[in-house]
Length: 214
Image 1 (cartoon, rainbow, N blue to C red):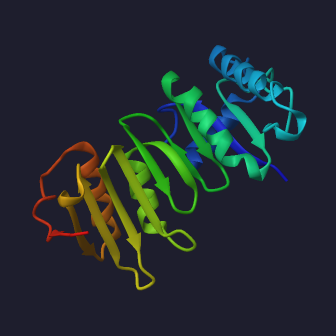
Image 2 (image 1 turned 90 degrees about the horizontal axis):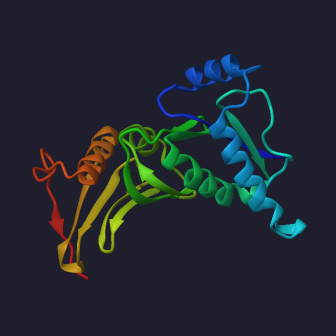
C-alpha cells in the first residue's frame, strides 16, 4: 500500500470537501508550470537514490492532466521524508500540502515559521491557526503532545492527559523563564499556543502561569 500526499495552490480550498471539489475540477486540465517543476525535482531526487532507498511509489511523477494539483504516493516508511520534501518545495511557492488520509490541509497563508512536532504525525515546518485548532482537540495516544519552537530555548508545548486535561508549558529563552499551567478547554489551549506563536499577549499573561524550576 502507498500513502498519498497532495499539493495544491494556497487559498483554493479550506475544508476537505472543498479540496475534493477542487481536485475534481482540475481533472483534464493541462499540467501547471509549478506542478511540472515540483514533480521534476521530486523525480530527480528519487532517481539519485539507490533503488532500495527510493521514496516514490509511482513513477514517472507528473506529466498528467490534473491542472494545479500533484498527487505524490510513497511507501509508509517514507511518509515523513516525503512530507518534508513537499513542504520544502511547496511552501516557497505558496502551495499547500493536503493529507487525504488524515484530511489535514496545511496551507501556508498566514503561517508562523516554527519547528512543530506533532506526537502522532511527526514534524512540520510551520504553524497556522487552522492547524493548531485542528490538532489540539485530536491529541491522543501514543503521542498526545504538540511542541512549537521558534528559536533556541523559545518554545511552547502541550500534553493531553488521559482525563482530558492539558498541561501547557512555554520557555522564554532560558530554563529560568519556563512557565506552566493546566487547562481543560482544547479551544483555549489552541488559542494560547497561537497567541504565543504570534506574540499576542492579550489574555496570554492573564492565565495562571507558574514558573517551573529545574
